[in-house]
Amino acid sequence: MVLLVLFGFIAGAATAVSPCVLPVLPIALSAGATGGRRRPLGIVAGLTVSFTIAVVALVYLISALNLPNELLRDLAIVVLIGFGVVLMVPPLADRLEAWLSRFAGRAGAPRTAGDGFWSGTLVGASLGILYTPCAGPILGGVIVVTASQTFSAGRLAVAFAYGLGSALVLYLLMLGGRRVVRPLARRGKALQVATGAVMVLVALAMLGNYDLRFQRQVTADLPSFLVNPAEGLEKTASAESALAKIQGSSDGIGRRAAAEEGQREPVQHAADAVPLHDYGPAPEFTDTEKWFNTPGGEPLTMLGLRGRVVLVDFWTYTCINCIRTLPYLEAWDKRYRKDGLTIVGVHSPEFPFEREASNVEAAIAAEGIRYPVVQDNELGTWTAYGNQYWPAEYFIDARGHVRYVHFGEGEYGEKERVIRELLAEAGDRVGKGMSGAHGLEPSAAVTTPETYLGVARAERFTNPELSPGLHDFSAPRRLPPNEFAFHGPWRIDFHSATAAGGSLELNFGARRVYLVLGSVDDKPRRVRVFLDGRPISAADAGADVDGGVVSVNSQRLYGLVNLPRVGHHVLRLEPEAGVQGYAFTFG
Image 1 (tube, rainbow, N blue to C red):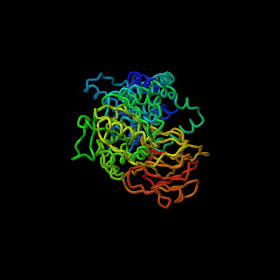
Image 2: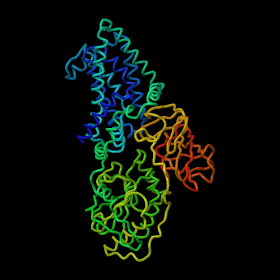
Image 3: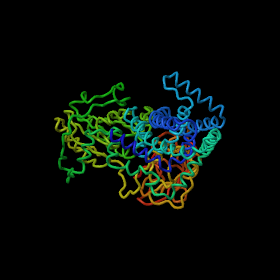
Image 4: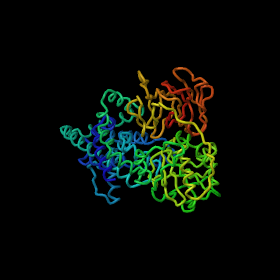
Protein backbone atom coordinates (compact mmCIF):
# COMPACT_ATOMS: atom_id res chain seq x y z
CA MET A 1 0.00 0.00 0.00
CA VAL A 2 2.84 2.41 0.85
CA LEU A 3 4.34 1.79 -2.59
CA LEU A 4 1.03 2.51 -4.31
CA VAL A 5 0.60 5.74 -2.32
CA LEU A 6 4.09 6.84 -3.43
CA PHE A 7 3.32 5.98 -7.05
CA GLY A 8 0.07 7.91 -6.75
CA PHE A 9 1.90 11.02 -5.50
CA ILE A 10 4.52 10.92 -8.28
CA ALA A 11 1.92 10.16 -10.96
CA GLY A 12 -0.21 13.08 -9.74
CA ALA A 13 2.75 15.43 -9.97
CA ALA A 14 3.48 14.24 -13.50
CA THR A 15 -0.15 14.62 -14.52
CA ALA A 16 -0.08 18.29 -13.42
CA VAL A 17 2.16 19.07 -16.41
CA SER A 18 0.16 17.03 -18.94
CA PRO A 19 -2.35 18.40 -21.50
CA CYS A 20 -5.16 16.97 -19.38
CA VAL A 21 -4.92 19.95 -17.00
CA LEU A 22 -5.42 22.55 -19.72
CA PRO A 23 -8.93 23.49 -18.46
CA VAL A 24 -7.58 23.80 -14.91
CA LEU A 25 -4.37 25.71 -15.57
CA PRO A 26 -5.67 29.19 -16.56
CA ILE A 27 -8.03 29.26 -13.59
CA ALA A 28 -5.35 28.15 -11.14
CA LEU A 29 -2.83 30.70 -12.44
CA SER A 30 -5.24 33.63 -12.56
CA ALA A 31 -6.92 32.85 -9.23
CA GLY A 32 -3.60 32.21 -7.51
CA ALA A 33 -2.17 35.47 -8.81
CA THR A 34 -4.86 37.61 -7.15
CA GLY A 35 -6.07 38.08 -3.59
CA GLY A 36 -4.08 37.57 -0.42
CA ARG A 37 -0.76 35.81 -0.11
CA ARG A 38 -2.34 32.59 1.13
CA ARG A 39 -4.82 32.16 -1.69
CA PRO A 40 -2.53 29.74 -3.63
CA LEU A 41 -2.27 27.62 -0.48
CA GLY A 42 -6.06 27.65 -0.17
CA ILE A 43 -6.40 26.53 -3.79
CA VAL A 44 -4.00 23.66 -3.13
CA ALA A 45 -5.92 22.57 -0.03
CA GLY A 46 -9.30 22.77 -1.75
CA LEU A 47 -8.08 20.89 -4.83
CA THR A 48 -6.50 18.07 -2.82
CA VAL A 49 -9.51 17.49 -0.58
CA SER A 50 -12.17 17.76 -3.31
CA PHE A 51 -10.20 15.53 -5.71
CA THR A 52 -9.90 12.88 -3.00
CA ILE A 53 -13.61 13.00 -2.23
CA ALA A 54 -14.56 13.02 -5.92
CA VAL A 55 -12.40 10.02 -6.80
CA VAL A 56 -13.42 7.83 -3.89
CA ALA A 57 -16.43 8.92 -1.84
CA LEU A 58 -18.48 10.64 -4.57
CA VAL A 59 -17.75 7.97 -7.17
CA TYR A 60 -18.93 5.33 -4.70
CA LEU A 61 -22.07 7.34 -3.90
CA ILE A 62 -22.85 8.00 -7.58
CA SER A 63 -22.47 4.32 -8.40
CA ALA A 64 -24.61 3.24 -5.43
CA LEU A 65 -27.41 5.68 -6.36
CA ASN A 66 -27.04 5.03 -10.12
CA LEU A 67 -26.51 8.75 -10.79
CA PRO A 68 -24.81 10.08 -13.95
CA ASN A 69 -21.01 10.35 -13.58
CA GLU A 70 -20.97 13.75 -15.32
CA LEU A 71 -22.70 15.10 -12.20
CA LEU A 72 -19.21 15.85 -10.84
CA ARG A 73 -18.31 17.94 -13.87
CA ASP A 74 -21.66 19.79 -13.81
CA LEU A 75 -21.18 20.59 -10.12
CA ALA A 76 -17.72 22.01 -10.77
CA ILE A 77 -19.02 24.17 -13.64
CA VAL A 78 -21.72 25.65 -11.40
CA VAL A 79 -19.14 26.45 -8.70
CA LEU A 80 -16.81 28.06 -11.24
CA ILE A 81 -19.55 30.28 -12.69
CA GLY A 82 -20.77 31.29 -9.25
CA PHE A 83 -17.34 32.10 -7.89
CA GLY A 84 -16.32 33.85 -11.12
CA VAL A 85 -19.34 36.14 -10.94
CA VAL A 86 -18.52 36.94 -7.32
CA LEU A 87 -14.95 37.89 -8.23
CA MET A 88 -16.24 40.16 -10.99
CA VAL A 89 -18.18 42.14 -8.38
CA PRO A 90 -15.52 43.24 -5.79
CA PRO A 91 -18.02 44.13 -3.00
CA LEU A 92 -19.46 40.61 -3.23
CA ALA A 93 -15.98 39.09 -3.20
CA ASP A 94 -15.05 41.08 -0.07
CA ARG A 95 -18.24 40.03 1.74
CA LEU A 96 -17.72 36.36 0.81
CA GLU A 97 -14.12 36.46 2.04
CA ALA A 98 -15.20 38.06 5.32
CA TRP A 99 -17.98 35.48 5.81
CA LEU A 100 -15.65 32.56 5.15
CA SER A 101 -13.12 33.98 7.60
CA ARG A 102 -15.76 34.36 10.32
CA PHE A 103 -17.01 30.82 9.64
CA ALA A 104 -13.46 29.46 9.94
CA GLY A 105 -13.00 31.35 13.21
CA ARG A 106 -16.19 29.84 14.71
CA ALA A 107 -14.99 26.39 13.64
CA GLY A 108 -11.76 26.86 15.58
CA ALA A 109 -9.51 27.43 12.55
CA PRO A 110 -7.03 30.32 12.59
CA ARG A 111 -8.36 33.55 11.17
CA THR A 112 -6.96 34.41 7.77
CA ALA A 113 -9.22 37.30 6.83
CA GLY A 114 -7.88 39.23 3.92
CA ASP A 115 -5.27 36.67 2.91
CA GLY A 116 -7.55 34.85 0.46
CA PHE A 117 -7.07 31.37 1.92
CA TRP A 118 -10.75 30.48 2.33
CA SER A 119 -11.87 31.96 -0.96
CA GLY A 120 -9.02 30.03 -2.56
CA THR A 121 -10.37 26.77 -1.12
CA LEU A 122 -13.60 27.30 -3.07
CA VAL A 123 -11.68 27.68 -6.31
CA GLY A 124 -9.54 24.66 -5.45
CA ALA A 125 -12.62 22.58 -4.61
CA SER A 126 -14.10 23.13 -8.06
CA LEU A 127 -10.73 22.46 -9.73
CA GLY A 128 -10.35 19.18 -7.84
CA ILE A 129 -13.61 17.88 -9.29
CA LEU A 130 -12.61 19.02 -12.79
CA TYR A 131 -9.31 17.24 -12.28
CA THR A 132 -10.94 13.82 -11.78
CA PRO A 133 -10.89 12.78 -15.48
CA CYS A 134 -7.09 13.21 -15.45
CA ALA A 135 -6.76 10.14 -13.24
CA GLY A 136 -4.48 7.61 -14.92
CA PRO A 137 -4.32 3.81 -14.65
CA ILE A 138 -3.64 3.84 -10.90
CA LEU A 139 -6.60 6.08 -10.07
CA GLY A 140 -8.71 4.38 -12.75
CA GLY A 141 -8.21 1.08 -10.95
CA VAL A 142 -9.10 2.65 -7.62
CA ILE A 143 -12.26 4.20 -9.13
CA VAL A 144 -13.44 0.90 -10.60
CA VAL A 145 -12.81 -1.01 -7.39
CA THR A 146 -14.40 1.67 -5.23
CA ALA A 147 -17.64 1.51 -7.19
CA SER A 148 -17.96 -2.26 -6.68
CA GLN A 149 -16.47 -2.81 -3.22
CA THR A 150 -16.73 -1.37 0.25
CA PHE A 151 -14.98 1.90 1.09
CA SER A 152 -11.43 1.56 2.44
CA ALA A 153 -8.78 3.84 3.90
CA GLY A 154 -6.25 2.49 1.39
CA ARG A 155 -8.15 3.77 -1.63
CA LEU A 156 -8.66 7.09 0.11
CA ALA A 157 -4.91 7.36 0.76
CA VAL A 158 -4.00 6.68 -2.88
CA ALA A 159 -6.47 9.28 -4.15
CA PHE A 160 -5.24 11.82 -1.58
CA ALA A 161 -1.60 11.24 -2.61
CA TYR A 162 -2.48 11.67 -6.29
CA GLY A 163 -4.33 14.94 -5.61
CA LEU A 164 -1.57 16.22 -3.33
CA GLY A 165 1.13 15.52 -5.93
CA SER A 166 -0.80 17.47 -8.56
CA ALA A 167 -1.66 20.30 -6.17
CA LEU A 168 1.95 20.87 -5.13
CA VAL A 169 3.08 21.25 -8.75
CA LEU A 170 0.22 23.68 -9.40
CA TYR A 171 1.20 25.55 -6.23
CA LEU A 172 4.70 26.13 -7.60
CA LEU A 173 3.20 27.34 -10.88
CA MET A 174 0.92 29.73 -9.01
CA LEU A 175 3.83 31.15 -7.01
CA GLY A 176 5.63 31.81 -10.26
CA GLY A 177 2.51 33.47 -11.62
CA ARG A 178 2.32 35.81 -8.62
CA ARG A 179 5.86 37.00 -9.27
CA VAL A 180 4.95 37.75 -12.88
CA VAL A 181 1.92 39.84 -11.97
CA ARG A 182 3.48 41.56 -8.94
CA PRO A 183 3.99 44.81 -10.92
CA LEU A 184 0.22 44.86 -11.44
CA ALA A 185 -0.51 44.81 -7.71
CA ARG A 186 -1.68 48.42 -7.82
CA ARG A 187 -4.52 47.26 -10.04
CA GLY A 188 -5.49 44.36 -7.80
CA LYS A 189 -9.25 44.90 -8.15
CA ALA A 190 -9.05 45.00 -11.93
CA LEU A 191 -6.96 41.84 -11.94
CA GLN A 192 -9.49 40.18 -9.64
CA VAL A 193 -12.32 41.08 -12.03
CA ALA A 194 -10.30 39.68 -14.93
CA THR A 195 -9.74 36.46 -12.98
CA GLY A 196 -13.48 36.12 -12.44
CA ALA A 197 -14.08 36.65 -16.14
CA VAL A 198 -11.55 33.93 -17.00
CA MET A 199 -13.35 31.51 -14.67
CA VAL A 200 -16.74 32.25 -16.19
CA LEU A 201 -15.41 31.94 -19.75
CA VAL A 202 -13.74 28.60 -18.99
CA ALA A 203 -16.93 27.32 -17.34
CA LEU A 204 -19.04 28.36 -20.35
CA ALA A 205 -16.55 26.66 -22.67
CA MET A 206 -16.87 23.53 -20.57
CA LEU A 207 -20.66 23.63 -20.89
CA GLY A 208 -20.20 23.23 -24.64
CA ASN A 209 -17.38 20.67 -24.19
CA TYR A 210 -15.02 23.03 -26.04
CA ASP A 211 -12.32 22.33 -23.49
CA LEU A 212 -12.38 18.64 -24.41
CA ARG A 213 -12.29 19.41 -28.13
CA PHE A 214 -9.33 21.74 -27.62
CA GLN A 215 -7.57 19.10 -25.54
CA ARG A 216 -8.10 16.48 -28.26
CA GLN A 217 -6.69 18.82 -30.91
CA VAL A 218 -3.65 19.60 -28.79
CA THR A 219 -2.92 15.96 -27.99
CA ALA A 220 -3.81 14.41 -31.36
CA ASP A 221 -0.26 14.47 -32.72
CA LEU A 222 1.64 14.27 -29.44
CA PRO A 223 3.48 11.10 -28.39
CA SER A 224 1.80 9.19 -25.56
CA PHE A 225 4.52 10.04 -23.00
CA LEU A 226 3.67 13.75 -23.40
CA VAL A 227 -0.09 13.20 -23.28
CA ASN A 228 0.29 11.23 -20.05
CA PRO A 229 3.77 11.61 -18.53
CA ALA A 230 2.81 9.25 -15.70
CA GLU A 231 1.83 6.41 -18.01
CA GLY A 232 5.20 4.67 -17.95
CA LEU A 233 5.37 4.82 -14.17
CA GLU A 234 1.81 3.64 -13.62
CA LYS A 235 2.24 0.61 -15.87
CA THR A 236 5.40 -0.68 -14.22
CA ALA A 237 5.31 -4.15 -12.71
CA SER A 238 5.63 -2.72 -9.19
CA ALA A 239 2.67 -0.35 -9.64
CA GLU A 240 0.48 -3.01 -11.22
CA SER A 241 1.35 -5.46 -8.45
CA ALA A 242 0.47 -2.91 -5.79
CA LEU A 243 -2.78 -2.09 -7.55
CA ALA A 244 -3.70 -5.76 -7.69
CA LYS A 245 -3.48 -5.87 -3.90
CA ILE A 246 -5.81 -2.91 -3.38
CA GLN A 247 -8.22 -4.54 -5.83
CA GLY A 248 -8.53 -7.43 -3.46
CA SER A 249 -6.44 -10.12 -5.16
CA SER A 250 -4.65 -11.36 -2.08
CA ASP A 251 -1.88 -13.93 -2.23
CA GLY A 252 -4.33 -16.80 -1.78
CA ILE A 253 -5.03 -20.10 -3.47
CA GLY A 254 -5.98 -18.46 -6.77
CA ARG A 255 -2.74 -16.53 -7.13
CA ARG A 256 -0.64 -19.55 -6.19
CA ALA A 257 -2.53 -21.73 -8.64
CA ALA A 258 -2.12 -19.11 -11.40
CA ALA A 259 1.64 -19.03 -10.80
CA GLU A 260 1.81 -22.83 -11.12
CA GLU A 261 -0.53 -23.15 -14.10
CA GLY A 262 2.21 -22.72 -16.68
CA GLN A 263 4.15 -25.59 -15.09
CA ARG A 264 1.22 -28.05 -15.16
CA GLU A 265 1.88 -31.14 -17.26
CA PRO A 266 -0.89 -31.71 -19.83
CA VAL A 267 -2.86 -34.96 -19.56
CA GLN A 268 -2.01 -37.01 -22.64
CA HIS A 269 -4.89 -39.48 -22.78
CA ALA A 270 -8.52 -39.36 -21.74
CA ALA A 271 -8.08 -42.48 -19.61
CA ASP A 272 -5.15 -41.03 -17.63
CA ALA A 273 -5.67 -39.83 -14.07
CA VAL A 274 -5.42 -36.07 -13.60
CA PRO A 275 -2.59 -35.05 -11.21
CA LEU A 276 -4.12 -33.49 -8.10
CA HIS A 277 -2.47 -31.12 -5.63
CA ASP A 278 -3.30 -29.97 -2.13
CA TYR A 279 -3.64 -26.18 -1.92
CA GLY A 280 -4.86 -26.36 1.66
CA PRO A 281 -8.29 -25.81 3.25
CA ALA A 282 -10.87 -24.08 1.09
CA PRO A 283 -11.81 -20.59 2.36
CA GLU A 284 -15.29 -20.11 3.77
CA PHE A 285 -17.96 -18.20 1.83
CA THR A 286 -17.29 -14.66 3.09
CA ASP A 287 -19.27 -11.37 3.04
CA THR A 288 -21.97 -12.85 0.82
CA GLU A 289 -25.49 -11.59 0.16
CA LYS A 290 -28.49 -13.50 -1.18
CA TRP A 291 -28.41 -17.25 -1.82
CA PHE A 292 -30.38 -18.87 -4.64
CA ASN A 293 -31.40 -22.50 -5.17
CA THR A 294 -30.90 -23.49 -1.52
CA PRO A 295 -33.69 -24.64 0.84
CA GLY A 296 -35.38 -21.49 2.12
CA GLY A 297 -32.57 -19.36 0.69
CA GLU A 298 -30.36 -20.45 3.59
CA PRO A 299 -26.58 -20.01 3.18
CA LEU A 300 -24.22 -22.92 2.69
CA THR A 301 -20.89 -23.26 4.49
CA MET A 302 -17.76 -25.20 3.67
CA LEU A 303 -18.00 -26.85 7.09
CA GLY A 304 -21.57 -27.92 6.38
CA LEU A 305 -20.50 -29.36 3.01
CA ARG A 306 -17.74 -31.48 4.58
CA GLY A 307 -17.95 -35.03 3.25
CA ARG A 308 -19.11 -33.89 -0.21
CA VAL A 309 -16.99 -32.95 -3.20
CA VAL A 310 -17.49 -29.22 -3.92
CA LEU A 311 -16.91 -27.26 -7.12
CA VAL A 312 -16.78 -23.48 -6.53
CA ASP A 313 -17.31 -21.55 -9.78
CA PHE A 314 -16.64 -17.79 -9.89
CA TRP A 315 -18.76 -16.18 -12.59
CA THR A 316 -20.79 -13.14 -13.56
CA TYR A 317 -23.84 -13.25 -15.78
CA THR A 318 -22.65 -10.87 -18.54
CA CYS A 319 -19.35 -12.73 -19.11
CA ILE A 320 -19.49 -14.75 -22.35
CA ASN A 321 -16.67 -17.00 -21.15
CA CYS A 322 -18.72 -17.79 -18.04
CA ILE A 323 -21.89 -18.32 -20.06
CA ARG A 324 -20.16 -20.87 -22.29
CA THR A 325 -19.13 -22.93 -19.24
CA LEU A 326 -22.64 -23.10 -17.78
CA PRO A 327 -23.91 -26.06 -19.89
CA TYR A 328 -21.02 -28.15 -18.59
CA LEU A 329 -21.63 -27.16 -14.97
CA GLU A 330 -25.33 -27.89 -15.33
CA ALA A 331 -24.60 -31.30 -16.87
CA TRP A 332 -22.16 -32.20 -14.08
CA ASP A 333 -24.67 -31.11 -11.46
CA LYS A 334 -27.35 -33.31 -13.02
CA ARG A 335 -25.01 -36.30 -13.39
CA TYR A 336 -23.08 -36.25 -10.09
CA ARG A 337 -25.19 -34.44 -7.48
CA LYS A 338 -26.69 -37.70 -6.20
CA ASP A 339 -23.17 -39.18 -6.09
CA GLY A 340 -21.87 -36.51 -3.69
CA LEU A 341 -21.04 -33.41 -5.80
CA THR A 342 -22.19 -29.91 -4.84
CA ILE A 343 -21.59 -27.04 -7.27
CA VAL A 344 -21.72 -23.51 -5.85
CA GLY A 345 -21.75 -20.59 -8.26
CA VAL A 346 -20.17 -17.50 -6.68
CA HIS A 347 -21.54 -14.52 -8.58
CA SER A 348 -18.85 -11.82 -8.32
CA PRO A 349 -20.10 -8.76 -10.28
CA GLU A 350 -18.09 -6.73 -12.76
CA PHE A 351 -20.61 -3.92 -13.44
CA PRO A 352 -22.81 -2.07 -10.91
CA PHE A 353 -26.09 -3.44 -12.27
CA GLU A 354 -24.85 -7.00 -11.73
CA ARG A 355 -25.14 -6.36 -8.01
CA GLU A 356 -28.94 -6.32 -8.24
CA ALA A 357 -30.44 -9.55 -6.84
CA SER A 358 -33.35 -9.39 -9.30
CA ASN A 359 -30.95 -9.27 -12.27
CA VAL A 360 -28.96 -12.23 -10.96
CA GLU A 361 -32.16 -14.19 -10.27
CA ALA A 362 -33.40 -13.51 -13.81
CA ALA A 363 -30.08 -14.71 -15.27
CA ILE A 364 -30.20 -17.90 -13.19
CA ALA A 365 -33.71 -18.62 -14.47
CA ALA A 366 -32.80 -17.80 -18.09
CA GLU A 367 -29.79 -20.13 -18.03
CA GLY A 368 -31.70 -22.92 -16.25
CA ILE A 369 -29.20 -23.10 -13.37
CA ARG A 370 -30.36 -25.49 -10.62
CA TYR A 371 -27.28 -25.64 -8.40
CA PRO A 372 -26.77 -23.12 -5.54
CA VAL A 373 -25.62 -19.60 -6.41
CA VAL A 374 -24.56 -16.86 -3.98
CA GLN A 375 -24.07 -13.13 -4.55
CA ASP A 376 -20.52 -11.97 -3.78
CA ASN A 377 -21.18 -8.25 -4.26
CA GLU A 378 -18.41 -7.10 -1.91
CA LEU A 379 -15.96 -9.61 -3.48
CA GLY A 380 -15.34 -11.06 -0.04
CA THR A 381 -15.20 -14.68 -1.22
CA TRP A 382 -13.31 -13.64 -4.37
CA THR A 383 -10.67 -12.03 -2.15
CA ALA A 384 -10.58 -14.95 0.30
CA TYR A 385 -9.62 -17.25 -2.58
CA GLY A 386 -7.20 -14.72 -4.07
CA ASN A 387 -9.13 -15.13 -7.32
CA GLN A 388 -8.34 -13.04 -10.43
CA TYR A 389 -10.47 -14.42 -13.27
CA TRP A 390 -13.96 -15.08 -14.66
CA PRO A 391 -14.64 -17.97 -14.87
CA ALA A 392 -12.51 -19.73 -12.28
CA GLU A 393 -13.20 -23.16 -10.84
CA TYR A 394 -11.92 -24.60 -7.56
CA PHE A 395 -12.37 -28.34 -6.97
CA ILE A 396 -12.56 -29.26 -3.27
CA ASP A 397 -12.34 -32.76 -1.83
CA ALA A 398 -14.49 -34.30 0.88
CA ARG A 399 -12.01 -33.13 3.56
CA GLY A 400 -12.50 -29.51 2.51
CA HIS A 401 -9.14 -29.08 0.74
CA VAL A 402 -8.70 -27.46 -2.68
CA ARG A 403 -7.18 -30.10 -4.97
CA TYR A 404 -7.48 -28.66 -8.48
CA VAL A 405 -7.91 -25.17 -9.95
CA HIS A 406 -8.76 -24.09 -13.49
CA PHE A 407 -9.10 -20.59 -14.98
CA GLY A 408 -11.10 -19.77 -18.09
CA GLU A 409 -12.84 -22.06 -20.53
CA GLY A 410 -11.89 -25.47 -21.86
CA GLU A 411 -10.42 -28.70 -20.50
CA TYR A 412 -13.93 -29.92 -19.76
CA GLY A 413 -13.04 -33.58 -20.10
CA GLU A 414 -10.13 -33.18 -17.71
CA LYS A 415 -12.31 -31.32 -15.20
CA GLU A 416 -14.98 -34.02 -15.28
CA ARG A 417 -12.30 -36.63 -14.56
CA VAL A 418 -11.21 -34.54 -11.57
CA ILE A 419 -14.77 -34.69 -10.26
CA ARG A 420 -14.83 -38.45 -10.67
CA GLU A 421 -11.43 -38.89 -9.01
CA LEU A 422 -12.44 -36.80 -5.99
CA LEU A 423 -15.74 -38.66 -5.65
CA ALA A 424 -13.86 -41.97 -5.83
CA GLU A 425 -11.46 -40.74 -3.13
CA ALA A 426 -14.48 -40.02 -0.93
CA GLY A 427 -15.73 -43.58 -1.44
CA ASP A 428 -18.65 -42.69 -3.70
CA ARG A 429 -19.67 -45.01 -6.56
CA VAL A 430 -20.03 -42.92 -9.70
CA GLY A 431 -20.42 -45.63 -12.34
CA LYS A 432 -18.87 -45.67 -15.79
CA GLY A 433 -21.10 -43.26 -17.67
CA MET A 434 -19.85 -39.70 -18.27
CA SER A 435 -22.19 -36.71 -18.26
CA GLY A 436 -22.12 -36.18 -22.02
CA ALA A 437 -21.73 -32.42 -21.39
CA HIS A 438 -21.32 -30.21 -24.42
CA GLY A 439 -21.62 -26.52 -25.20
CA LEU A 440 -20.49 -23.67 -27.42
CA GLU A 441 -16.71 -23.60 -27.85
CA PRO A 442 -14.73 -20.38 -28.43
CA SER A 443 -13.44 -19.93 -31.98
CA ALA A 444 -9.77 -20.21 -32.81
CA ALA A 445 -7.81 -17.32 -34.41
CA VAL A 446 -9.83 -14.53 -32.75
CA THR A 447 -7.66 -11.38 -32.80
CA THR A 448 -9.84 -8.73 -31.12
CA PRO A 449 -9.59 -8.73 -27.31
CA GLU A 450 -12.35 -7.83 -24.87
CA THR A 451 -12.93 -4.07 -24.91
CA TYR A 452 -14.68 -1.79 -22.42
CA LEU A 453 -16.60 1.35 -23.38
CA GLY A 454 -16.31 3.16 -20.03
CA VAL A 455 -13.43 5.57 -19.59
CA ALA A 456 -11.94 3.72 -16.62
CA ARG A 457 -10.88 0.73 -18.77
CA ALA A 458 -11.35 1.84 -22.39
CA GLU A 459 -8.66 0.67 -24.81
CA ARG A 460 -8.12 0.58 -28.57
CA PHE A 461 -10.33 3.60 -29.31
CA THR A 462 -9.21 5.93 -32.10
CA ASN A 463 -10.99 8.80 -30.31
CA PRO A 464 -8.22 10.48 -28.32
CA GLU A 465 -8.42 11.14 -24.58
CA LEU A 466 -11.78 9.69 -23.61
CA SER A 467 -13.07 11.37 -20.47
CA PRO A 468 -16.37 11.50 -18.55
CA GLY A 469 -19.02 13.81 -19.96
CA LEU A 470 -20.98 14.52 -23.13
CA HIS A 471 -18.85 14.52 -26.30
CA ASP A 472 -19.50 15.08 -29.99
CA PHE A 473 -17.00 12.74 -31.64
CA SER A 474 -15.75 13.10 -35.19
CA ALA A 475 -15.29 10.02 -37.37
CA PRO A 476 -11.66 8.90 -37.92
CA ARG A 477 -10.32 8.81 -41.46
CA ARG A 478 -9.39 5.16 -41.12
CA LEU A 479 -10.31 2.49 -38.58
CA PRO A 480 -7.39 0.07 -38.10
CA PRO A 481 -7.98 -3.62 -37.33
CA ASN A 482 -9.12 -4.35 -33.76
CA GLU A 483 -9.86 -0.66 -33.16
CA PHE A 484 -13.06 1.11 -32.11
CA ALA A 485 -14.47 4.60 -32.67
CA PHE A 486 -17.36 6.68 -31.36
CA HIS A 487 -19.12 8.93 -33.90
CA GLY A 488 -21.37 11.85 -32.97
CA PRO A 489 -22.76 12.60 -29.51
CA TRP A 490 -22.09 10.12 -26.69
CA ARG A 491 -22.11 10.50 -22.93
CA ILE A 492 -19.07 8.72 -21.50
CA ASP A 493 -19.08 7.45 -17.91
CA PHE A 494 -16.56 5.44 -15.89
CA HIS A 495 -18.27 2.09 -16.55
CA SER A 496 -20.27 2.69 -19.74
CA ALA A 497 -21.07 4.87 -22.74
CA THR A 498 -24.61 6.16 -23.33
CA ALA A 499 -25.81 6.95 -26.84
CA ALA A 500 -27.06 10.49 -27.37
CA GLY A 501 -27.61 10.29 -31.12
CA GLY A 502 -24.23 8.93 -32.19
CA SER A 503 -22.98 5.61 -33.57
CA LEU A 504 -20.17 3.18 -32.80
CA GLU A 505 -17.87 1.33 -35.19
CA LEU A 506 -15.38 -1.48 -34.66
CA ASN A 507 -13.02 -3.30 -37.00
CA PHE A 508 -13.03 -6.77 -35.43
CA GLY A 509 -11.37 -10.08 -36.14
CA ALA A 510 -13.64 -12.84 -34.82
CA ARG A 511 -16.55 -15.08 -35.66
CA ARG A 512 -18.95 -13.88 -32.95
CA VAL A 513 -19.46 -10.45 -31.38
CA TYR A 514 -21.20 -9.82 -28.06
CA LEU A 515 -21.95 -6.57 -26.25
CA VAL A 516 -23.25 -5.87 -22.74
CA LEU A 517 -26.15 -3.43 -23.16
CA GLY A 518 -28.68 -1.68 -20.97
CA SER A 519 -30.94 1.37 -20.86
CA VAL A 520 -30.68 4.49 -18.72
CA ASP A 521 -34.28 4.23 -17.45
CA ASP A 522 -34.94 0.53 -18.12
CA LYS A 523 -37.25 1.40 -21.02
CA PRO A 524 -36.97 -0.83 -24.13
CA ARG A 525 -34.78 0.69 -26.82
CA ARG A 526 -33.41 -0.43 -30.18
CA VAL A 527 -29.99 -0.74 -31.79
CA ARG A 528 -29.60 -0.98 -35.56
CA VAL A 529 -26.77 -3.31 -36.64
CA PHE A 530 -24.71 -2.93 -39.85
CA LEU A 531 -21.94 -5.22 -41.10
CA ASP A 532 -19.45 -3.98 -43.69
CA GLY A 533 -21.66 -1.00 -44.54
CA ARG A 534 -24.94 -2.91 -45.00
CA PRO A 535 -27.73 -3.96 -42.63
CA ILE A 536 -26.64 -7.28 -41.16
CA SER A 537 -28.20 -10.32 -42.84
CA ALA A 538 -30.11 -13.00 -40.98
CA ALA A 539 -27.35 -15.48 -41.85
CA ASP A 540 -24.71 -13.37 -40.08
CA ALA A 541 -26.81 -12.01 -37.22
CA GLY A 542 -26.33 -12.99 -33.60
CA ALA A 543 -29.00 -14.57 -31.44
CA ASP A 544 -30.38 -11.22 -30.24
CA VAL A 545 -30.68 -9.56 -33.66
CA ASP A 546 -34.06 -9.67 -35.39
CA GLY A 547 -34.43 -7.98 -38.76
CA GLY A 548 -31.15 -6.11 -38.29
CA VAL A 549 -32.27 -4.67 -34.95
CA VAL A 550 -31.48 -5.51 -31.32
CA SER A 551 -34.25 -4.83 -28.79
CA VAL A 552 -32.58 -3.82 -25.51
CA ASN A 553 -35.05 -4.76 -22.79
CA SER A 554 -32.75 -5.62 -19.88
CA GLN A 555 -29.15 -5.19 -18.72
CA ARG A 556 -27.35 -8.25 -20.05
CA LEU A 557 -25.06 -9.65 -22.75
CA TYR A 558 -26.44 -9.49 -26.32
CA GLY A 559 -25.28 -11.56 -29.28
CA LEU A 560 -24.75 -9.25 -32.29
CA VAL A 561 -22.80 -11.22 -34.90
CA ASN A 562 -22.51 -14.96 -35.65
CA LEU A 563 -20.48 -15.57 -38.80
CA PRO A 564 -19.69 -18.93 -40.48
CA ARG A 565 -15.98 -18.45 -39.75
CA VAL A 566 -13.48 -16.05 -38.21
CA GLY A 567 -12.76 -13.00 -40.35
CA HIS A 568 -12.12 -9.25 -40.26
CA HIS A 569 -15.22 -7.10 -40.68
CA VAL A 570 -16.44 -3.61 -39.77
CA LEU A 571 -19.45 -3.51 -37.47
CA ARG A 572 -21.46 -0.31 -37.03
CA LEU A 573 -24.08 0.13 -34.32
CA GLU A 574 -26.68 2.90 -34.37
CA PRO A 575 -28.38 2.87 -30.97
CA GLU A 576 -31.35 4.96 -29.94
CA ALA A 577 -30.62 7.71 -27.43
CA GLY A 578 -30.48 6.26 -23.92
CA VAL A 579 -28.92 2.90 -24.82
CA GLN A 580 -25.91 2.09 -22.61
CA GLY A 581 -22.97 -0.03 -23.74
CA TYR A 582 -20.52 -1.59 -21.32
CA ALA A 583 -18.12 -4.13 -22.88
CA PHE A 584 -17.50 -6.05 -26.11
CA THR A 585 -16.41 -9.68 -26.08
CA PHE A 586 -15.56 -11.90 -29.03
CA GLY A 587 -15.60 -15.59 -29.83
